[in-house]
Structures are given as C-alpha cells and as structure tokens.
Length: 369
View (cartoon, rainbow, N blue to C red):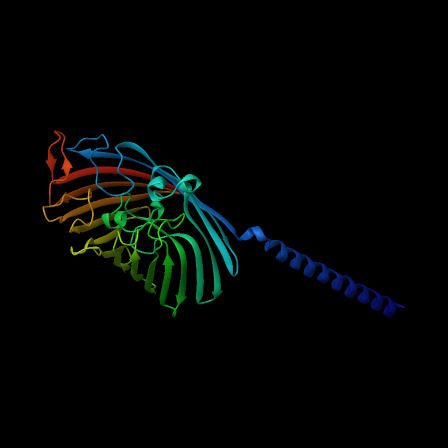
C-alpha cells in the first residue's frame, strides 16, 4: 500500500514538473518573440543648440564675422533643432535626419520647399557582412568636421569644412576589405544638389580607410563637373582626415585638402587648399580643452568673399580657435576664443576701416538626446 502511494506521488510529481517546464519554455519563447517586435529596431536621437558671439575691436551688427559656416551671427543666436529617425534591420534600414533653424538652413541651402528641413534621407542594404549599398541623400564623406554640432569639438567651423561639400545625393558602395581596411566608391549629383540634378553631369567619389583601436585615417577623393557642361570645368578634390589617441588624455586630429577646378578657356585652374591640426587635452572627466589651428589659401580667384585677394586672385588666412568643452549631463557648453588673420585686408574694425585680423568670442550650448 505504501509502495503504491509512493509511486503515485512520484508519477504525479513528474507530470507536474514536466507541465511546469513546458509552461516556462512557452513563456520564454513568447517573451523572446515579444522582445523582437518590429518597432524595437527604430531609434530616435538628435540635438538642439544655440550660441552667443561677440567681436573684439570690430562691429557687432552681423557685417563682420569669419567667412565660415553657421556661427556667424552677432549676439544671441539660434543653431538648429535636429531629429534623427532610424531603422536598423538585419539586412536593410533607413535614416531620416531632419533639421530646423539657422544652422539647418545653411546646411541645406540648395533645397526648396519641404526639403529645406532634410539634412539626410537615405536607405541602405547590407548585401553581405562586407558589402553595403546606400541610396539617397547623405552627408559628405570628405573632411574632418560635420554639420551637426554634436560631431564637432569646436563650435565654430573651419574654412575647409565651410567650402568643401556638405551633402550628396546618389548611390555609394562600402566595402570592408579587412578588419582594419575599408573602401568606398560613389556616383552622385553635383555637390549639394540634394533634391534633384539640374545638370546632365555626375560626380564620382572614392575613399580608402584605415581604422585601429587608437585612431583612424581616411583618404578621400571626388571628381566631376559640378555645374552646366561647357560653362564649368571638372573639379577634383583630394582630402585626408585622420585622428589618433597619442596618450590616455591627448588626442591629435589632422585634416588636409586640395581642390582645383579646370578653366574652360586658356586660363589656369583655380581652387583652394588648406591644413588644420586639432590637438585636444582631456583635463578632467567633464572638461576638455582643444585647439584648431588652420591655414587656408585661395589661388586664382578660386573663391571670392572668403579672404582678401591680391591682384592675381590669391589670398590666405590663418585661424586659431581655442575651445573648451564642459559636459553637464547631456548638455555641453563650449566657450571659445577665435583669431582670424588674412594676408590682405578683409575685415572691418570699429571705425569701419579695413583690417587683416578679427578676434571673437563664442559660447555654444548643445543638448543631445
């Protein structure tokens, strides 16, 4: 009798245990399926920013400022509101990068209508683990600095960034050649014509990249006719962007670029070239001090209204920008002092007289989410 009861209880215990395990397994599978819902691959990020700028020894009425992008208004001024929507699937995804405000307007200056708020809009396909295709409007692969203030250490921008391309619309292919080497090729509309192509011309881009644990280097190229055929000659640009952690708290970035546009007649080619160094010292966990030292030169009237030019259309500028970056949670304050010195008289002092130098102060505030 006792043996029979023991067997009955044992069999009942086994059945209960198996049923419990089945419930746990079912719950785990259901939870796993619930964790993989389609909207879990969506992301939302972005930033808002504004700044204050003041000239020393020069007028503060927006008539005198460094001829670079974005932080060129006097007094308290707006940057932009930036919202980035993304979807990252196993094979495919997209990015919709929307901007609104003065900085955003400057970034998409060749756009009209609703596209004035579109900074980037592209879809991508991870064809294999080492091959990716991107189609649409994407920010340029050339240069050290970017449109979003979150991606730059200095709040004001360099001359090389301001007169290099901002964005492209086209098709690019990225290749992972090895764990450290990468390559990219692209065919695109003329630079900064992101909505459509008003000319029957296209430009080509290429990149060779090397990435290691302590830094990276990218050699970039673009070539093509940037305007109406027969009116504008082909443009060629070569650009080197690199940055390395030389010590635990010391970083050095370097950007060098050369751009030339062929003349349609018998005149010499025109363009510009420059180099900039970006040393940065991390003083504390929250505060970093950095310097941007840039030399930028225009030849044969390659650009006008940027630096003072001599009778042959040549001119240059040396710009030194000392920036502090202090983090308060997701808010970053960036006070900076900037001195621009041109080879020819270009700026105006308080008396309205032409001068070769301009010193200014900028305080930028950036909130990222």
